[in-house]
Image 1 (cartoon, helix red, strand yellow):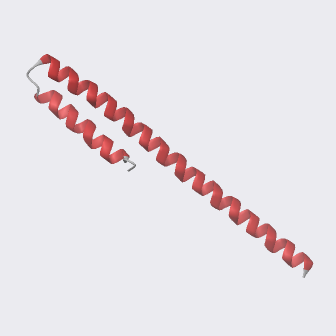
Image 2: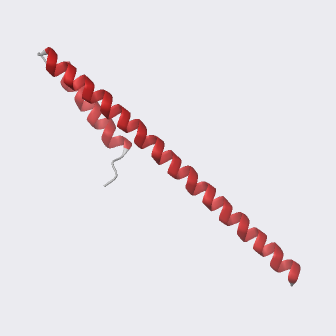
Image 3: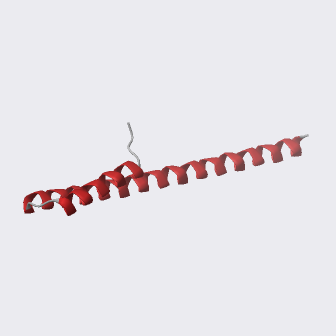
Length: 78
């Protein structure tokens, strides 16, 4: 199951909150490391999503151009 930017961002926010509430230094540091990791995963998920959307737009534009070219050729023949 692919996780979303929102999921990772929520986890990062939860880790940041836990770090703020931590009374022990090692717990605070652990939660801050977790937050950093979750934020990195969120950014990666955002980038993957944007790349997929870009690829889909490019494919759609290519299909449209090919369809236009086929219509032009059909009109020239007919």
